[in-house]
Image (cartoon, rainbow, N blue to C red):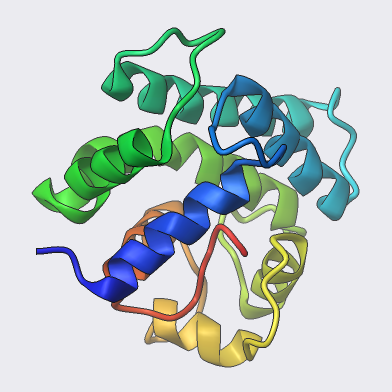
Length: 178
């Protein structure tokens, strides 16, 4: 059974990914979101890191388009389709399918925030991550602890789990922002 917190978070995720505000998510919304993130990190879209994030967002869009049975290039995802896909592939069934779809996006974002090139996110890098994702009114140190109890660094798998935990209502930190 989906809780009101989960439904609210699904709705907010849809609204944040509906960049042009037309009530549907399409490939152009995913492109715009990746460009917004790159701009927030100060990264050129044509750089290797920029292309990695853009390609990862395209892969995530393809996941949603496939699950909805819509055309990848011209299809438009309704709020109802998005809701059903998130319920089935994020909230239920252990989130394995969604984990595979979002992992490249998280990896690309780690590459943007990881200033010491250790392929993990430190508490300081996590603050940069949250700022770039537009997360406000959250203490970065507390947010980091919610996602990683031992407090050293966050791996790609831990961040993927955190995205799911947020949508499940288990943590209050939105790793993908807004």
